Image (cartoon, rainbow, N blue to C red):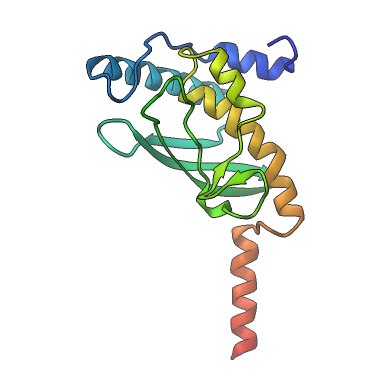
Amino acid sequence: METWDPTTKSTLTQIPLLSVKAGPRDGAAWTQRLKEEYKALIAYTAMNKSKDNDWFRISAANPEGTRWTGKCWYIHNLLKYEFDLQFDIPVTYPATAPELELPQLDGKTQKMYRGGKICLTVHFKPLWAKNCPRFGIAHALCLGLAPWLAAEIPILVDSGMVKHKDDTAASSESSDVKAV
């Protein structure tokens, strides 16, 4: 943590660390782990809202807590770009970090795997391994998805690979006018 900027370090220290080392196959221990995950996510979300830095919504998509879905967004040039977010908890969790997916961006950047899985191997995976089982979903969002969005979305927007929803609507309306 000594090489991180003060904001990242401050944010990370406010996300509760997890203590239960359990995955989806571990029954009651997994239920305890999920409770810790929710507490960390609630703390992270509350902290973001208090700093006017709200940038995601996620929830478990199944009762077992092994599939998560939601939205994440990034503000660039005063425009909000919103994306679907989804991931599955790996069977070997928490030893293995979840692979965060942004399906709408699949194939638009080299820093992404098939299916819209963002590339976290070089920077995030070693950090996750070093901090297992203390890191959880909130940490993956904070240290994985947030920096990825900050690095990639401006490039994708500036190159024209990602269009703002108003630009897309305006261009389809103008093309409809031309077609008539």
